[in-house]
Image (cartoon, rainbow, N blue to C red; front, side):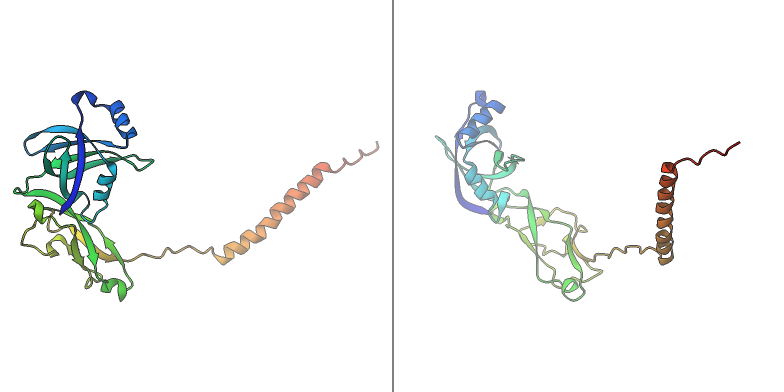
Length: 232
């Protein structure tokens, strides 16, 4: 999906790479990035993480094609192909950008969105289980969809929606295997908790006082004074 977003970037020199330099870049409020592809050399950059986050959180996400404006250079159509987050603070740490040739087909992963209320859920009391969250397709950059709708309204127990059931033809070529399952209706089995046998409970209850009584009697025997020895 093509966006009007323009991300401004500044070029880094080859000498200014490495972990220490990356930390210095982040202190300034920017993050390190690299752009490559289209048979051109890769360029190390710095970009505004807020702009990248906005793109990643858009409807088309990382499949968004946008303009990269490099300082003292021209604009290029690019796409986010990889990104790293801080595992604790969830801040963007680094991104990889790929130059896009608008006339050449590319491979992308497109999210699948289930639409409709399944008959298996509504009428049969089942639970929807989405097995596949995205499919890989091949198409021109301008034809990349933000997502693909999957109609599950007629799905009931015993049926499975597969990639082969998605609308085919036209501008998209599906690369994910046709027999790959997307969704089906499942059920949750109730866990049966074994109930102790009534006779066993009565036997246990009857046995416990004996153990306690025996322990008490043993204590009394231990503390009782010894019987006087018989006279000769």
